[in-house]
Image 1 (cartoon, rainbow, N blue to C red):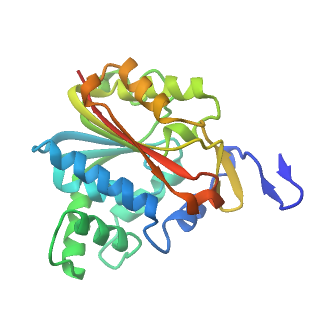
Image 2 (spheres, one colour; image 1 turned 45 degrees about the vertical axis):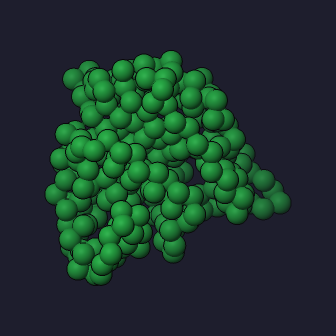
Length: 262
């Protein structure tokens, strides 16, 4: 379906997805305020546990590395997965690159600033990104609609699971989102931690000149599904962060959440 006045697709199919369009729209120039907020939140949650996580997974990484870079000091090993092979090609290329690749330098600098590091120069950024390349072990194509998104052997496997702006973008049907949530969080081990980010009240978000689906979520939706999928009620934290300047992309707020498995 196309808006004839603008030529913009109202809701595109992911067969039309271009990883570079996503990177250019959201990551190529600055660290946007919503990404600043969720990266700071992710670091705060990981720091608060007071321990390193043995096995971590970023589910729905897209063509991005910033969440993995942020997680690096807090995990022993990390896997990354996505539905689209095109996204994982971008991740694989970065993992195989050297210090001359500067695509994610500004995010690395921002992450290290959130950690309170006093000296952040080119060499320390290089070291952090080199550490990330060592920590990331596996890249997997996966579909959150599968009962076992990475196979039955990964059920209850990960001590930390991070998913940012992915599970709410699979479908405009909130029932599909709930099923995907159940499937994905089943990979978290007992006492494991989840960190999640979603677009708030978003029915479609912009990538390039296309619009892709959103699940139209509220904070109550997120808290409810975490309670229903076996997380300690007292550990569930859901925060709403206004992003009024992002209305041009199809959303004006984000939801960030964390919880610990029972």
